[in-house]
Amino acid sequence: DTAVSQTPKYLVTQMGNDKSIKCEQNLGHDTMYWYKQDSKKFLKIMFSYNNKELIINETVPNRFSPKSPDKAHLNLHINSLELGDSAVYFCASSPSGTSGTNEQFFGPGTRLTVL
Amino acid sequence: DAKTTQPTSMDCAEGRAANLPCNHSTISGNEYVYWYRQIHSQGPQYIIHGLKNNETNEMASLIITEDRKSSTLILPHATLRDTAVYYCASGGSNYKLTFGKGTLLTVNP
Image (cartoon, rainbow over all chains, first blue to last red; front, top):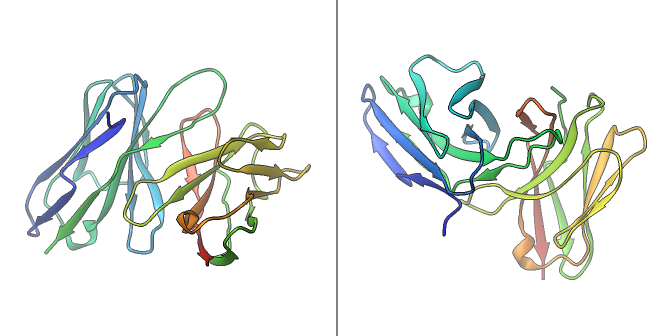
């Protein structure tokens, strides 16, 4: 009954490769997010989608491309992987509403290691 | 987007209250204060949030100063399982949460 799930949990790959991380939520939320957590544990938003539309796109290299086939899924594709892309990537989701709050639920994370 | 600052680490004795401070002096009027925690290798877990009033739930209490420039998360009776990194974050209706660098809370027996 996992609320927000990500696959794979671990991803080890060579520099220059292309890889994808998948995220699914079964909470019925309209909004989904990708965060990057670096080695210093700093958590930074990368992208957000609301009802399959991109609403947040922080300063992220265009080698990173999110795709939302439906509002329960948000995948992250990374082209030409670099050493600096090594990090833990978290997916999250939240309900959208008019209250102004933004309680987000996070997945377990994908630890990406680029060699 | 409001920037939040937190102490890097804190210790607390088991069974005592843990009081974790956060400074968010640039928070705007419509931004909420959120607290999350991250236990080693897991995804961040939502704890509580508030706008102006103090809030309490089954996990913790949130005290927000009247000028909203700072807040304190209170774990009333800390247990060893509360050892984690606690993140203070701010965000409004624009779907964006800006996280602080977190406080590593170590609960000691």
